[in-house]
Length: 256
Image (cartoon, rainbow, N blue to C red; front, side, top):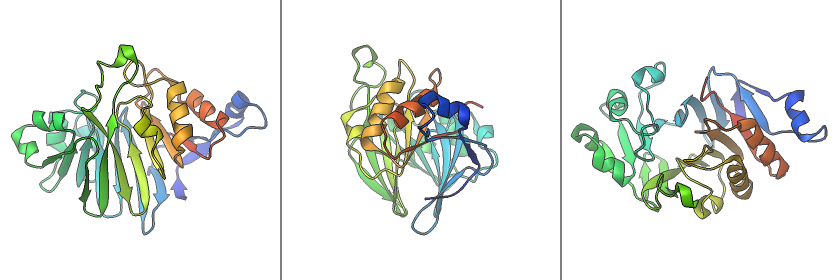
């Protein structure tokens, strides 16, 4: 359960989208201290940075997901203990940003294709994980989940078997970072996800209908639409609400 959030529930205008008797599980949050969620012994705090990049602090560790955009975007955040990179596209992988952010004891986990691209200094800090592999870093169990396109005219963007999503088990909570993917069977089959990050922009990932349908099936407790440039996250929230699942849609300031 969430202990603190600098956020406001969507008001009457949002409720009107679904009708007077329906409550939209959508949160418009203010960027201050991030969104904080309870774990068994501590907290997970989410700090959206931009597009597909965010900082997540968890008990005993600071995690950066797909950090790009230069070190200045991360000013005020602690140095990362762990950096996760899902795939090679420039809005997810930037070697210069990684080099600027990675400290002496920072570990990187990437998909194999990115691992092959890393400069030697970064490669020495990195571990390649392929789809289906698992490993433990500190007290966190990490599973590499497939991320790929399935629609005929999108197959060239993210071929099956190359890119990763990640499921992290953090102090009793499971967090899913989808990366760039469509609503693949591996996503729909996920269970017991507490927080999910799901993309929805065309033509590279999926549309609102696909994303909402998948979320309704695996039903995370909280879901962040991210990587959604050109799509409407409020419309996504409305579709999830129509599915009548107990999932709360959280809107972060990815493009503020």
